Image (cartoon, rainbow, N blue to C red; front, side, top):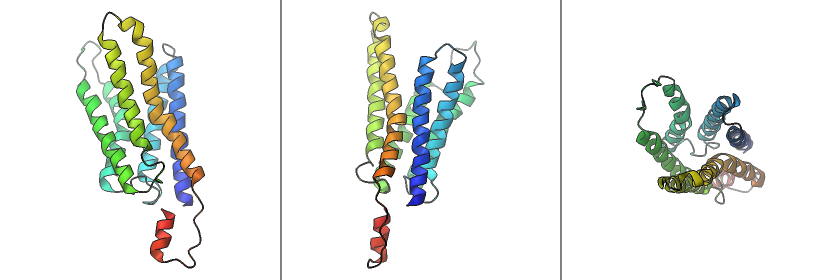
Length: 209
C-alpha cells in the first residue's frame, strides 16, 4: 500500500507539473522559453505515465502490469517525445510532414482508448476514481473536436481562434493537471490497510486492493 501511495504521488505530481508547464508555455508563446517548456511538458508527461504504468510492483501499476494496458500506456508515454525526435529530421522546405497528421491523431487516440479501458478493468484504481481517465479522454476529444468545428468556417475563424485555443487548453489540462489532482486525491482518500488477524488470505488481498 505504501508503494502504491508513493507511485501515485510521484505520478500525480508529475502530471500536475506538466499541466502547469503547459499553461506557462501558452503564456510565453513566441519567447525563448516556449520550446523549453514544451520539452518539459513532454518529459513530465512521459515520466508520469510510465510511473503509473509500471509502478514499483503489479499492485502499484494502474493496469496491474497486464500486458495490453501496460504496453498501451508505455507507447502513449513515448509517443510525443518520439514525434519530437522525428520532427528534427523534417525538411523545412518540404511542407509534407514525415508522419501523416492522420497517424499523429489516430494512433495516440487508439492507445488512449485501450489504456483507459484496461485501467478500469484492472481494478487497481479505487472504484470512485477508476473512470476518471476515461472522462479526461472524453473531455480532450470533445475539446479538440469543438475547436476544429469552430475553425472550419473561414469567415469566423479569426474571431473564434481564441475560443478554440481555450478549448484546447481545457482538454490538455484535463489529461494533465486534472488527472494529477485525481491521483493525489486517490492517495489521500485511501484508508490504511487493516491488519488481517482474523481474515483469510483472500480477504487480506482484497483489502489491499
